[in-house]
Image 1 (tube, one colour):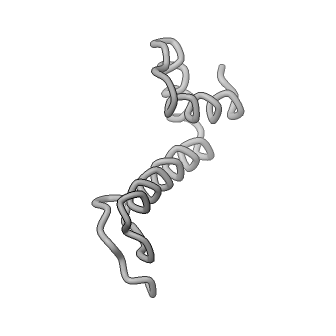
Image 2 (cartoon, helix red, strand yellow):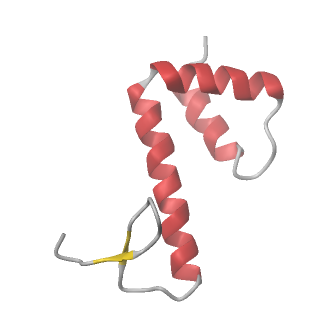
Image 3 (cartoon, one colour):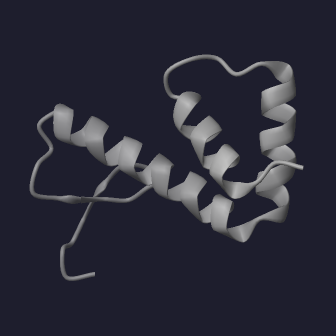
Length: 75
């Protein structure tokens, strides 16, 4: 069984290279059962969206993960 350290490492590596089928299956099974790694995966996705928005020049706004629209900062 994969541990959280290996799971987070694979999630990070997946941004740089394609994972093997065995890696993807093991990672998916772990993430299904581990709320901490589910949170990490979601946070990585949010950071990825925010950095893409920043690279496009959308600075000074908060980004909603579901559709990448600017949000009011007071929310």
